[in-house]
Image 1 (tube, rainbow, N blue to C red):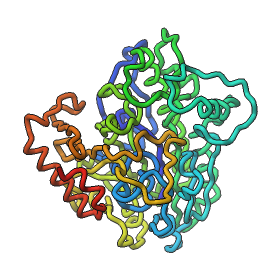
Image 2: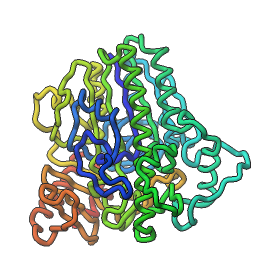
Image 3: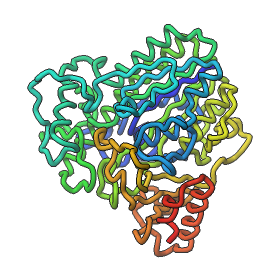
Image 4: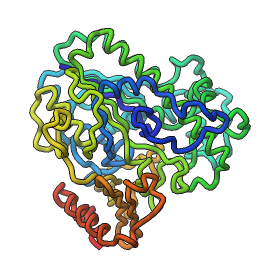
Amino acid sequence: MNVIVIMNDSLRRDHINAYHVPPPWPRPGHEGEPFIETPNLDRLAEESAVFERCYIASYPTIPNRRDLFTGRWGMLEAGWEPLRPHEVIISEVLNAAGVVTQLFFDSLPLGGEGYNFMRGFQGWRWLRGQHGDHWVTAPWPVKLPCLPHQMRGNIERMKRILRNSYMRRYERDYMAPKTIAAAIDWLEDNYTHESFFLWIDTWDPHEPFDPPPYDYARYADPSYDGPAIIYPQYGRSDYLTEAELNDIRARYAGEVTMVDRNVGYLLDKIHALGLDKNTMVIHLTDHGYLMGEHHLIGKPGDLLGNLYEPSCHVGMMIRHPEGSAAGERIKAIVQPPDVMPTILDFLGVPIPPTVQGKSLLPLMRGEVAKLHEIAVSGRFTYELPEGAADTSQEFGGMAGSRSHVCARTVTTERWSYICGPYDMPSELYDLDSDPLQEHNLIEQYPQIAQELRQRLIQFLEDHGAPEPGIAPFRK
């Protein structure tokens, strides 16, 4: 038996048709046309268990990968930092069990100096050139696509981004297509292994939002003549005109469709090689991306860093080769730490005692109705250990990664509670009647808010969070 994991970074759940989420905004100039086109992820969903209530745990990119690789709620003990030597990770566990392990990635932070997320994989390949990768040095005549205050990061990083993409001509020159094509080639050489574990990690549709021109045109307002804001500044979205915001949304949608098409090529190859008979396919993302909700854009931190539904409610689907739960919509709350034990369970490998998540296979078989009472999502919110590095800004990871004022989001089947630390304000939303979180009910239902705060504290204590990570929420 084999496992293939497909990670597409920053993929909003409402941008995959299969999740049946109403379009969050119109497409000017494309009235009557589909909001988004994702035919390949849609067909994967038809053959998969679709997890309707998957919520991120640790946020954003690197903390999420720690959750996935360790099966733990990493935000309780680690920030945006390299894997620690003592952490038990999935690649090493599978190696010890005799499973062939391979990683393909273009997600820049995974290859950051000392981060070591390649650790334990018998084979790995970093597809270079994504984002601000220190890769191309040629003096190409690059030109900033927008005003400096509209773009995230410094001018030099934006120039690196533009140099890295300057020579693109065909779709195969874009990053997600490169990475997926390399994984397809590997499958042709390796599909006869008795058991393999393949992890494919693409940063698309993450910024920069620079899809092929035909994918951009599919969603862009034909009348737009403003700047190309391919990497928006995080925070309040008020610096953008409505036309500029809509253009960013169109560029992002073009990225999603490009990713979907290339995932389709991978699915076709899996079928051609006969791997759909003995291979579990897991499709994931690490978080969403704000595009005007709550007057915010991107992944802001500190006082603007609350994790609302567009950021923390994500998609996850698992295609089991025996058809377990194929096409079913699973309503139970699940989180990224559940992925590692699910993979080990499927491959018949003992789950290490360090793992905090739970296998999803009993849910898929209908043996249990739920695994978790609540989902807890958030950032690491206290000081890093002495000597630990925090290079999240280099990778455009997030703002406020060292902050002590980041809230935690607690989600139940009905409620979304944004629990502010210390004396910071909290928020409460009824997801049944207000899925867009437009009406804060914290004053109407203080008792529910207090109950959810206590459940958060209990969760933190039960999962071994150090006291500095609990104290801000005790109030």
